[in-house]
Length: 350
Image: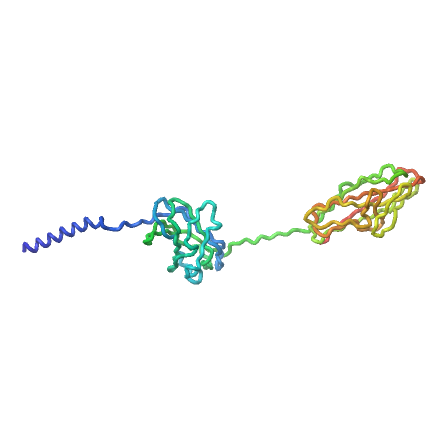
């Protein structure tokens, strides 16, 4: 009987000693910590659409550990070989284009190391610093968003070489019915034709010289793709005096060539000058009839519309200037009421 008690006592002593020593012989375990600010951004959130590039931004916790990999466990709504590939080598990454606030995380070979179920594992080039924002972009391998859902949650976590989780966090990455806004607009046709003035005086005419007006500009702006036209007509095709019942008639003929006035000989013409051919538009052309080459020349006036100028494309402020010119003889009757009215119009060629 005593022998029996001695054996029982020895067993109890050994059991107590083992329970005391056991905590001293266990391998320390790494406890998972909550990662910091983390998110995943898809290029496209639309359901049943290729998500494109997927930006992963992951902030380590304040704990200092030795990470060997970072992994993403996709939500169960992602089906292997439907929404993502099960072939690790086809899941590629880059650090080009990550936010400027982030540090490239360094993925070995820029490809996934393994795919197990819905968990994609990436091997790290180096251990990560604590409390640091890292980033990388998955460029291929997750190829199709599932059906629209607001309950999609992925888990991002880092591990040691022994697959102990270090930092972990869940992120919501919903898929929606549509992620694009169609923006439309209408640009109406436009054409502006603005005069710099509406009168021009030839002053006191002299038989010893050719007189010219100061000129009136016309500024044309239009989005007409084919350009614009400008036309002009004269009320009288002459400068008329009611007092003297006399007309200083227009010179020459309409023959695509300007006429030159001579001092001492009656004549009346219209010169059209190109003042500005605005950049980034069509090329302005002055009609040959009215393209005077000096201060004595211009085109023959008509009581019907004649083309004065044109352009072959849009205009952002083309400017033409209309200058009347006149000459008289020594016998031209004196009067202060010689006058004519020029009508100048334009149109955009849409």
